[in-house]
Image (cartoon, rainbow, N blue to C red; front, side, top):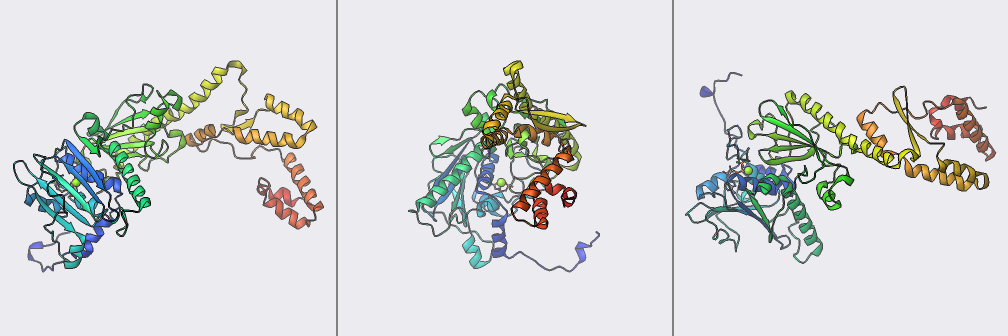
Amino acid sequence: MNIEFDNIKTASAIPGAAAMIETFRAIGYSLETAVADIVDNSISASAKNVWINRIWKGGDSIVTIRDDGRGMSGDDIIQAMRPGAQNPLEERSATDLGRFGLGLKTASFSQCRTLTVMSKTQGQSPEFWTWSLDHVARCDRWELVHWCPEGFEHELDDLASGTIVIWTDPDRIIPAATKAENENAKRKFSEAFDRVKKHLSMTFHRFLEAKSVAIHWGGHEIDPWNPFCPKESKVQIMPSEQIGEQVTVKGYILPHKNNFSSETAYRQAEGIFGFSAHQGFYVYRGDRLLLAGDWLGLFRKEEAYKLVRIQINLPNSVDSDWQIDIRKAKAAPPVGCRQQLESYARQACNKGSEVYRHRGRILKQRAGQEFQSLWLEKKKDNKWSFVVNREHALVRNIRELAKENPDQAIDMLLKFVEESIPAKTIYVREANDDDSQKQPYSDMDPGLLRTMIKQIHERQLDQGLTPEQSRLALKQMEPFNEYENLIDELQ
Ligand SMILES: Nc1ncnc2c1ncn2[C@@H]1O[C@H](COP(=O)(O)OP(=O)(O)O)[C@@H](O)[C@H]1O
Ligand SMILES: [Mg+2]
């Protein structure tokens, strides 16, 4: 488009402050991602320590995130408080975890109505400014207020330089009218922050491991949670691969439960949402984890791949190619990388599902020649099916029992079949190739079906059903519903 901007009539269209600032609340942060975004700023400001504090006072609770980074002058605070403080297109230093110049404001407003930033640089006294959604709503202007919550004036006194972000009126964490005595609300508040703690130990694990930053939580430091279990000796590590000039991927296959060093280590490795949810790509931007287990739209999550975790390392210079969002909770690989990512991930997934097949084989080997499987895998015309082993001692015994007590025998047989369905193996086969399983009843003898249908039909007629009703009942009965033609043959 060629518009002559120099010689054209214009009209001002400034966003309405009160309405616009409310929309900042709706960007979709969770409490975890919001706190992590504030911690990003501390790390970008070269903090060595971050202290997170929450003070329970019901609806008047307060959350603070304090750091000993380089701090800001009064003017810097005003600049930092401006939405869009820095253009996202500007180049950033490699250690800068920011991007849109919005995080401080959007993350805070997603949780609270009042955001205070107090900060000091080396050798200067602290300065502060506050965004109050209530003030903006009243005056409808982009206007900070010079206010600091009571009792926080000296929070930076013990630091040479640093910043404290204070969230008051946290109405998105606890409803405003909640009383401090409300034990139920207090418990929920504390549980919400347990999740925050876990999220931080995962998101910043590389910083915590390298001890470049310590995150203090109440009286202790948060421990790192490393998704790739570096202390476990039986993790399979795939060779790392380069994607384009700047991106690397590296696959890890975690060991089977029994091959972890301990039950505790296995539980620990599971992560916040469990193994199944934590399979997939782990996208790092710099050393900061953005996504902890996501197939980025390339695969579905499958039980068979739950031990597969693949690291993707991005520099912050590829943000726009990878569509990093404001919350830093989403990424999408550029079209040019997809194929390579997919084929790398497929190899990893094959190795991942092999862990289970391998496990099955070991169990059989342990039992040696004597091993009697209740289920047998059959392959015919390239299709897998599973059949109950008629030669199994159990089946033979039940046959004997049936002569004396048919009811008990049938119940027992059904019970054993139900309990022993090889669900995991079926799942793995299905996941690897969802076309490889035999269609149900596809090689059932039609003579057998006819006999069954006829017998049930006759019984139903004896019970007083009309032929019409009986045929209808059969058509609604698995598996006969698939064989309407056989049912229609009935007289
Ligand atoms: N804890 C902090 N210490 C020093 N400077 C900070 C801190 N938090 C925010 N800032 C400044 O405020 C700016 C705006 O922060 P933010 O809104 O999160 O956007 P972004 O991180 O994308 O730049 C940052 O670029 C930084 O200059
Ligand atoms: Mg930021």
